[in-house]
Amino acid sequence: MAAITLGGNAINTSGELPKVGTKAPEFQLVKNDLSIASLADFAGSKLVLNIFPSIDTGTCATSVRTFNAKASALENTKVLCISRDLPFAQKRFCGAEGLENVINLSDFKTGSFGKDYGLEITDSVLAGLHSRVIIVLDENGTVKYTEQVPEIADEPNYELALASL
Image (cartoon, rainbow, N blue to C red; front, side):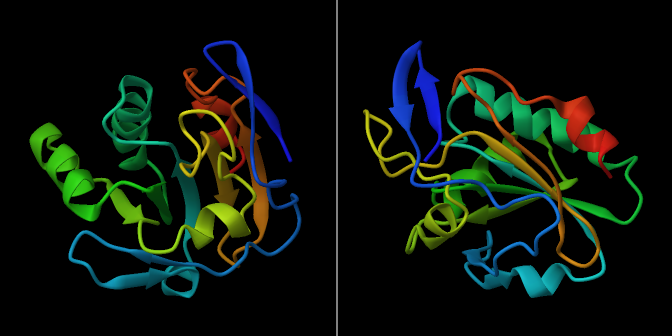
C-alpha cells in the first residue's frame, strides 16, 4: 500500500506499483468506441501509462495535454491515458481539446486495472478512483519506470518518465 496525500491529508492505495524490471500485468480496458484493448494489443511499442483519477480535474487534464504535446515526437511510443472515467467523457475531452496523440482507456467496468496495478485509492472522497501514476513499459511489456505521485493534485515528472524510454 502506498501512502499519498489529497490536499495534504493522508490517503492510501490498494497496493504497490509493479516493480521495475518485471512484466506489467495484462489488462483489459475500454476504448472510446467501447471495444476492449489489452496490453497484448500494444506489443512491440513502448508505452507511457498516464494514469489519473478523472479527466475532469485540472491536473489530470494538464497531464493529458502535456503528454499529447510530447507524444508526437516519441519514436515507436504510445501514450495510454487511463482512468475510471466513462469512455464518453474521455472522448469528449480529447475532442474538445483537439488531442490526437494519446489513446484513452477506461477502467470503468471492473476497476481491475487499478487493483492489479496496486494504484486504486482505498479511502477518502476519491475511494475507488485511480491515484496519479506514470508507468513506462518497453516494447516487451517490461516495466522501465514508475512514479506514484505523492500529492494527488501535483503533476508527474514528465521529463524523468520520458527519459526512461
